[in-house]
Structures are given as C-alpha cells and as structure tokens.
Amino acid sequence: MEILATPRLRLRTADRGDADFYLALVNDPGFLEHIGDRGIRTREDALQALLDGPIAMQEACGHSLYVVELKGSGTLIGMCGLIKRETLDGVDIGYAYLAPYCGRGYAYEAGMAVLGLAPALGLPRVLAITSPGNVASNGLLRKMGLRFERVVHLVPGGAGSNLYSIDIEPPASRRATAGSSPMGRTT
Image 1 (cartoon, rainbow, N blue to C red):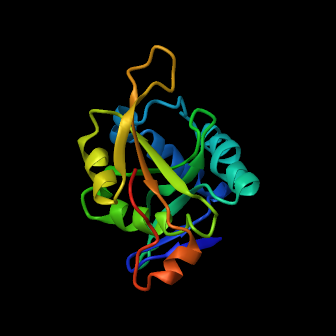
Image 2: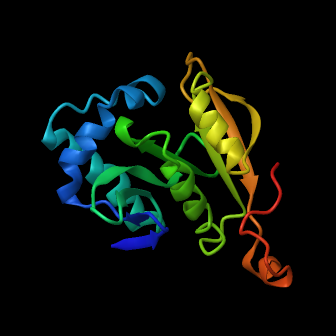
C-alpha cells in the first residue's frame, strides 16, 4: 500500500514480495557497518524478518519502515519510516539504502516526507539513533532539523548510539502559522 510520494520516490508498506530486496539491503556493506549484522542470510530469513518487523509493526502501530522505490522505474532502493523500538522512549525515524543510491539526496527526500507524517500520527516528538562514526547519517539528521541530545546505550556493554530528536508541531498549531513546516523546534 502506498503511504506517500515525493517528486522522485514512492514509499509503500513492505510485503512478502520484498524478501529478496530486504536480504540484499541488510547485507549491504553500509548496513553491516553502520546498523549491524542481523544474521539474515537466506530469502526465508529475510521474509521472516519482514513479517516480524515492518509488516507486524504497520499492523500494530499504523507506521513502520517503508520500502522506498524510484517513481520512474519502480526500482527498490532502500527503506525509511517511523519505528517504535522497545529500547527508546519514543518513535524514531530509521532508514537504510543500498550503496548505489546513497549520496543522491534520496534519504533526505524520503526522510523529510516521513517526518511530515508525524503530526497526523499524533507524535509530539521524533527520535533518531545513529552510530557515532556514521558521518553521513549524523549530517543527514542535522540537515533534517534533528538535534543531537546525547549518547545512549541501547545494548548493555555496547559502544553507544547518538540520540537525536525533533519536536513536532501539532496540526492545529501549523494551521495557525500559515506556511510553516510540519516540524517545530528541535530539542
């Protein structure tokens, strides 16, 4: 199901047919380096991860990681969406892209569109986490208006993750200030 579209991209819910794409994404060198090895090695593993992850979250929460595809060709290039993790006290924006599609502005375009969904979902704030060494993601989050808060340890004994946040302006406030963006001030 299509969730939203931007000038160059379409974001839709994940489905069973995305298993081969998801397998490639979670084994992409950038994913492994900056997000981590999920131990997904087969199409069946990827299908189960989709069913237990984005597909289940969409059903339970009304939001999830969405498949990002190029509008013109339908090529699947990554995922971007809003995630509720047990380890964080709020919803965070997450994203990952296949290497050939990094550095082309797709992550920013999709990320801003996803942040635009937050007011309708009633989210007062959106978080984000990155590995401290992920220079590209740390820069992208700042460009999107998120502000660094602190280093958090989501896994005991882990190296830590950078935690970012942005306060979301409620829809009623946006209407009162014509021409404003869906994002309010950063925290």
